Length: 201
Image 1 (tube, rainbow, N blue to C red):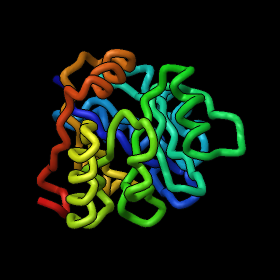
Image 2: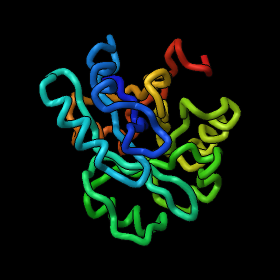
Image 3: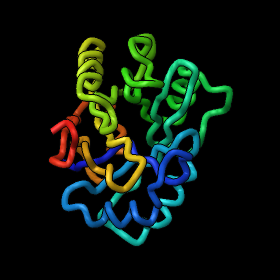
């Protein structure tokens, strides 16, 4: 069993102040969370930088990811380290991710830039039911959506600064390995959880 924050931004996102070096230091010093998905907006450059800085540490895992902006809403792709070809829409991004064996998550579906009920029209692997930057009532709607379409719920802090890291996390019944984590998310052996620093606690 591992604990992972599956939605984190770095300074490679224009609206984030989280320095990759500080992020790695925070991850290494955390007592229980040992995996993080770097999901910068529309770029994977943040992942490569964080991964480079984390190579010296054997007990943490950096998961490749990206939060992709589409006209329909935002989605998170995990497990692949390349971007799909543009123009981006939900169907084409999902199709590309499937070809590359990526894991596709509907990000904060009921917040601004979320897919809302449109998520029902696509084949996602999971729904982000616990987003650290989203109001509890909207997370509850995401949880209800996940149950309606029988998808697992995952959690990510959606941190854009150091102070917001690790507010929520996903419990994953897997080893500290990207492929194992991706397979486990798709099988649904996950649980979205709060930490005591969360505004939702």
